Amino acid sequence: MKILAPRQTAIAAVALASLLLAGCGDSQQQTETPASEASFSSAMQDAHSGMMLDEIPLGSAKAVTPFVDLEVEKATGENSYQVGEVFARGAELDGKTIRVRGQVVKFSPAIMNRNFIHLQDGSGDPAETTHNLVATSDATVEPGNIITIEGVLAANKDFGSGYVYRVILEESRVIE
Picture 1: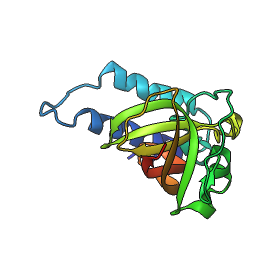
Picture 2 (picture 1 turned 180 degrees about the vertical axis):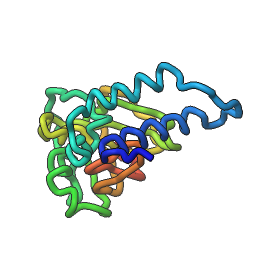
Picture 3 (picture 1 turned 135 degrees about the horizontal axis):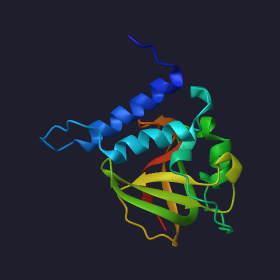
Picture 4 (picture 1 turned 45 degrees about the horizontal axis):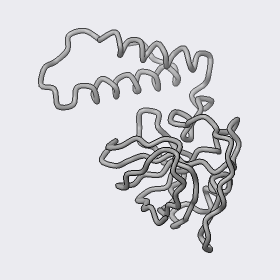
């Protein structure tokens, strides 16, 4: 039996999860790995080649969107924060209801029974991936709109398959 290094184990786990998710709802079994799944595995290996498991970027790095040069005024209220502040104070704010105002830079609907909203307000550091806050909600929003959203902050949230968020706003509702 071959023993895999931690990085290889993580890559194998991501590939296995992708195979399992790809087969959900399909009663036919595949006998060979499709090229798209093989290329995903290769891409994961190439992207993290030579890195130790603890060096693979976490946070919302897998889902982060490019930095948008903008300035959005901070939301009002005691529990209001800018995106960069949320990342800086994530452990302290874990489990607390907070409010953030920002521009919707990406909207991904109906993933794991929720919508994923990416917000930026001009704060945070793109090099540290602390400029893009992800919020989950049942709300539908349009990219480009400036919204105020309120939800419960979760620090170090792990959805599996390598999707680990340093901070994520959950159970969010759009209030403006």
